[in-house]
Length: 370
Image (cartoon, rainbow, N blue to C red; front, side, top):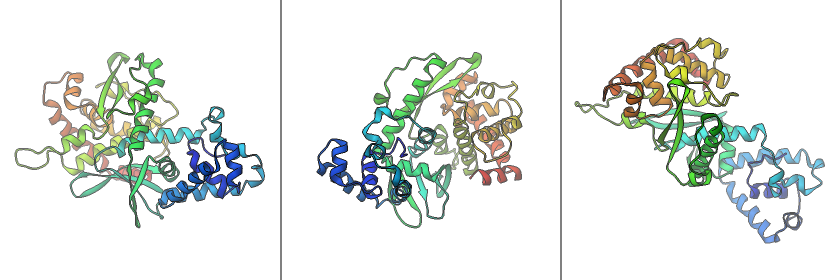
């Protein structure tokens, strides 16, 4: 009944406040002292100062209250007391998938999660260009509830719009989830895992397997705190002006958002190799989905359309830098280009990408997707 990811103190709190079980009865069921249960209840009560936590506990409380007749046995209310019998549901798997996407973005410098009472979803914002906050990701509100209850994010500013930042617990959880994902793909890629997920949670970097020519993947290590595009966006030309305009950075971030969403599809091993090979048939963009804002398949469609608009060569450098987070020097070597040519080509490609996103049809899709 209660989700697998819900922390044990929260389960105990709901069993006491919503299901009506006494502190001593809960202590007997959990095999601990009554004072331990009381401390858990008080701890969660203090959490309710956080708007997202308060919302989530209210929803779970109403769920339990509506099913009180089925909760005669404490074992039904306290699933956390028997973790080995728990099986992850589709909702639990959704939390893990979204955590890999959203927490990664929250690790970036200046990024925060914004929620408001009248907002159906939460958004991740970051100042990708000075003086302007840009949306870099969108997440369902129930997922934001899960993040707050697990202490992966904390409220740093309350008001009409509440701002949340990733915590040390959230950073460790992200690294562990990314390591577990790589372990799950070891059989398909042929790579042996060098570190356990719990070792990885103490590191400041992550890795991705980038498909290459001939179907053989290559490992790319990147900094969780910032993307190559962010680094390039801070550089200035000889005239003192930013090398990349705000529109170009926003276009790159929008492509990355769609790419991250496309990774959440039913097919966990998306075949991106054809997208990274100039001159090959990338397939019809319309064959990946039917209409905008319908989920991962439509995000993949938007990625395909964007790459098609840039064309071979230009799309290769953008896809590698913005989506797979390869550094410019690495991308140049993989593509067989001369040194320092990637920076110029990337700017031209991002300009064409920004033009594509400014078309009326793409503006309409962006609004629906948000």
